[in-house]
Length: 195
Image (cartoon, rainbow, N blue to C red; front, side, top):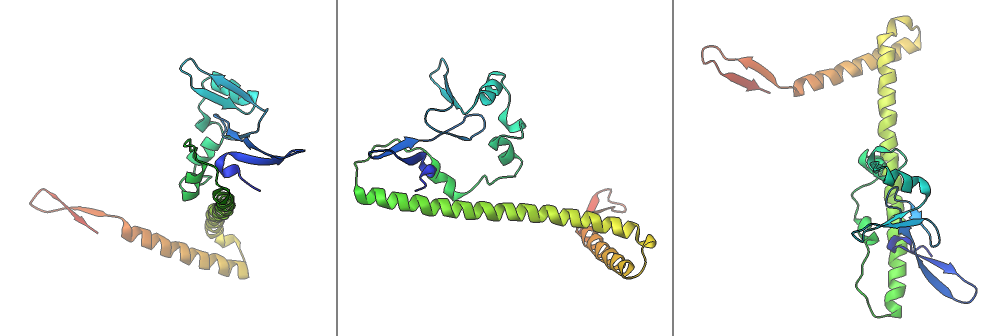
């Protein structure tokens, strides 16, 4: 069973099932399993958990996690990972105690599995879209290079280069039409804007 979305993991011990809470590292947001990592309690009773000494050291040096490439905060700030999604609401801690109900527990575990599957599908779709846009940028830069040096090509490659050149000119015309043209009006001294 996967129950990490609520911060719990189920492990099979010798005699019975036991639930263990999986915490998140304050610095890099990776999972901290029971018996691992360090915990730092500040004078104002704020608790910071760290998965390894590397994270604790960076915290003590007052480094910003959004500026270090290996942290989740950096990846989210740069748009490399999903930031807004309804499935993240299920990860929030709920500290209201509820009376044990077997049916509720079964439904909760099934719901956690469904939410985890949905999140994984959305994450995969997000990464595919991000990589597709990067591939498109690389292709267009390669096409521009071919157009620039089309006079050096011969045969069918030259035909492709000319087709790319026509496409790029068409795109440039569309971009040019979208820009705003400013002209000085005669006599009134004001500016007229045409689109």
